[in-house]
Image (cartoon, helix red, strand yellow):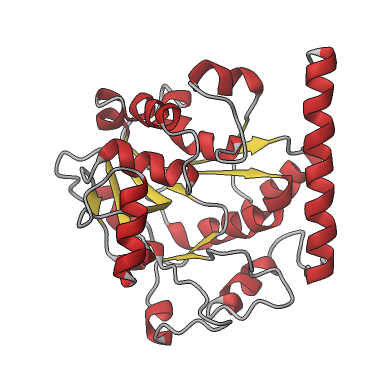
Length: 298
């Protein structure tokens, strides 16, 4: 089974910690790890490689040609280049067969992945975990209606996707998802909405321990602490990530333990002010990058 993720300059540290957890916990079921990189420097790739410490790690750069070749619409605020990556992976890794486990770079592997390698897929191209929005029925209904799904249809979180590569390609899931994006260019949840809209309930539900994610409620994670202890994949959703000074996530301890195994072990944690400055700098870089491409075609 292949494990794959996607990252950019803002999430290199989180990706490095994820890779450290894969090396420690994933087990022999994993034959290779792929990291799709959007404008990531060679130095940052070296840091990620050092965090993983094994020879079966591969980097693939997301470039404009890759996006243009597959995409039916432009990259915009509603669909980032790394979001395209998870949709394109089964076609980009054309020689890969069997299972591909996609995980967001803000996840941690906390248990062996062998059960996913042998899980009967029952003919489905995708297995995933219900999105936490299911806990608030009206939120779930509103989300489904926004993408044209029946109120009661299940809706998955795309942060962890177990993919049967042959079934995905046979059923043209990439193409159908991009067609869905083209028909609805203002999707609220980017690729997640598009994948759910394209599959229309035709996916295999996984136990929530394979993508344990809960949102902050008034600054507190209210889920029973026991569910986090039993999580096999921890997903740090939301804007407050575990390398922030103000993070109080129940499994931040696990994150920090793996962070200590990476070149980022002694890096300062990010503050609110620092994040605001970094966000503004990224916006400026994107603006000038687009301006350069328009003026010079490069």
